[in-house]
Image (cartoon, rainbow, N blue to C red):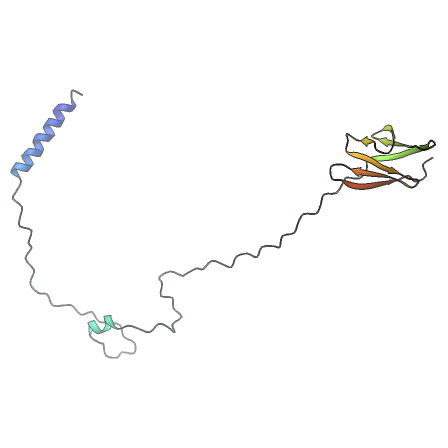
Length: 166
């Protein structure tokens, strides 16, 4: 802070000196130079014909409506046609996994049927209405030919044939 103040005062004094001793400004008007004759540059002509005057060559417009040349410096690129999107195809409905059970046997009482199933090495006695395999399969019906299951998460029906169950 102590060094900054003397530096600022020195710069202020230098600025004041430049303002006071600067040369007086001119009135800002510049005198025109003597008239210079225009220089005519030869134009390239096709076929060696006579050259038109410079002003006429510059101002002449050419018809470019039938020209294949692009009027732009760079090539104009247009976006390509959008890719044709595939028609929406709905995903197929998920299917229930195959039944993990195997029939071991069947026991029929007077009005009630019990079927013995094997699930992962364990024997299970099942009746109509039972839920199996962590409440994933429900027994809907038991007939002489098959057992009707419902795969509960998808509400899909499946059948397990009884075959030659004793």
